[in-house]
Amino acid sequence: MDQELTPAGLSPDQLDPSAPVPLYHQIYLVLREKIRTGEFPAHSVIPGEQELSRLFDVSRITVKRALNELAAHDLVSRHRGRGTLVTASAALPQVHGSFDNLIDSLKTMGLETQVQVLELADMPAPPAVAVLLDIETGTPVQRAVRLRKLSGEPFSYLIQYMPADIAARISREEMESIPTLVLLERVGATPHEAEQWITAVAAEPQMAAALDLASGSPLLRVERVMRDKDGRAVQLIHAHYRPDRFKYHMRSTRKSAGSWRADG
Image (tube, rainbow, N blue to C red; front, side, top):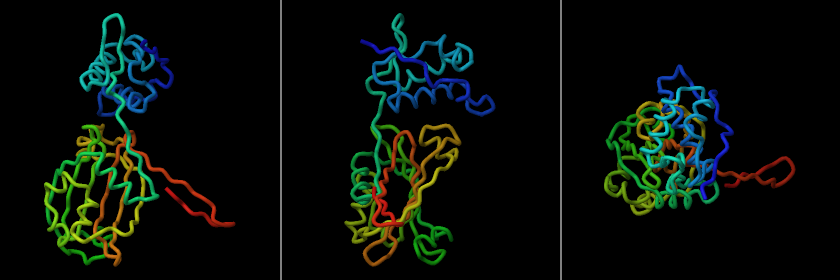
């Protein structure tokens, strides 16, 4: 039996009429988020055009365009007399990262997702990259831009830098089919430690387009440096994750009075 949904959490405050993104697409993004997070579960009936029009304070035509866009992306199906139903395949899985056993977590992520290499080029290391890789500015590095997908849907936008001598032993085809950490192990640059910084950023236009988001949408940004057992930096990556598809987990435990230890 189809589950009727209550319209809690839907309001005009979620829309920005001054934004360059059309109102119907903003409504689409709001509803898509509720579907992806499970708030609107599979087989449930979402509020109808008239009710959504009232809740968002927009025209019924605007709501209809938003619902049609959901249907075009196979997130809902529309039925005369039954309303708009969330499809069984709409709620896509999330990937959960962890600070504990980070290497294993990243390998698993690489196996569970698909990668497309968007850009690949050799270049002199810019100053900011050189500092993090602990090399001289202008030292040859390879820059790779990759799009990672989960169940065929955009998941993360990755900008990676590697020392040129390491990158030369890894082909583009391998980068699209084998987890990067496995490739580093194969070429003798096994990661031994990682240092990373996590923050939130707004999606730049090119990044937003690749991730199927509105420009300026919030992203989780992880900057990570991988080093081998000798302390040499073998990879720098700027990973930008869709927050609806990725979560990072951390647990803190107290070792002694006044000191804490953080675990994933």
